[in-house]
Length: 446
Image (cartoon, rainbow, N blue to C red; front, top):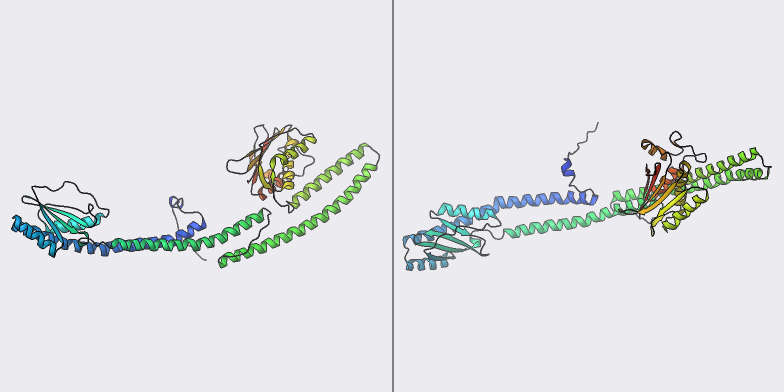
């Protein structure tokens, strides 16, 4: 038995992880590089730069200790002038004596406190007298002051005498290398993810019944998935074509004897039995129409951009002509892409279903805040228990124990309507209606 190890990631961390393939792939590549760069930089600072800075600071502290000791041996003005000239020539130190001055009480902190600490430690080891220094006031110099008898000995030293000033170049190269690697990773990952996105778009377009022009490209595994999708698409289209041809033949074979029966009944003498036979034939024709509509699905109809105002208005008017009490509230200028014939059939099924179980039906249409449109069909009938909403979408399920039986229906109206809505990327759900009965909510994308 094969055991698979599963990496446990806390939920708090998962919340911040990217969810897209592009983001995760980029994280997989960039995160190790960034961690490595940080580790190398830390090792450089800790093992090399700090050591170099400590040695440089100790050397500068030794020169300053010599200058202070020389001043203390002979604090005369003539000796101070000679000391300053000798320090300037031999040690590149600028020395000045400030008579009667005191050391400053405050000091600004450097951006790299570790550098100040190395100089602080070095001066504390070499000097007994109080001292003060500032590494932030001048870009190329360090201001160091030592409290001596009679005043302050101010010394200016070049910054590179205490610190390795080229360390920032190393950091800059590390940052530039990280950015370059990240840019290259983004380009390559973007190309691979784009192939997957195109495959997903093609699958979504095919699922909605649209025409697709898609060629496999990208990595070998992505091309294999694309070739498998195209083969599946060809098999499904072949199946649909065969089923369409079969349904056309079945429809012709069923309707021919049905038409003859209707003709014979129409020519027969009127009687009570003939009226019952006409009702049976009408019911049979309606059942055949619903069976074929359900089996045909969307029938290969191409989606079109239509104005819902006229389309829904026509369906509502047709329902009113049959005697249904339907009122409509339709917002103007609602343009969506759908299959007009399939939509008419689906909406007519919803209205007929509502009219069969209620006395009043209301159809309202409005744009959704998140995009698309929402079509509501309400009735004042007995409704359906909430735990049976999903059962109502099952084909041939009429929920006779919950709602009045529809003598003409076969339990396919809601199934056909949901298939149409989902085929367009939307959905159809049931809710409790404010009118007291059932509300069918059809959501369509914009």
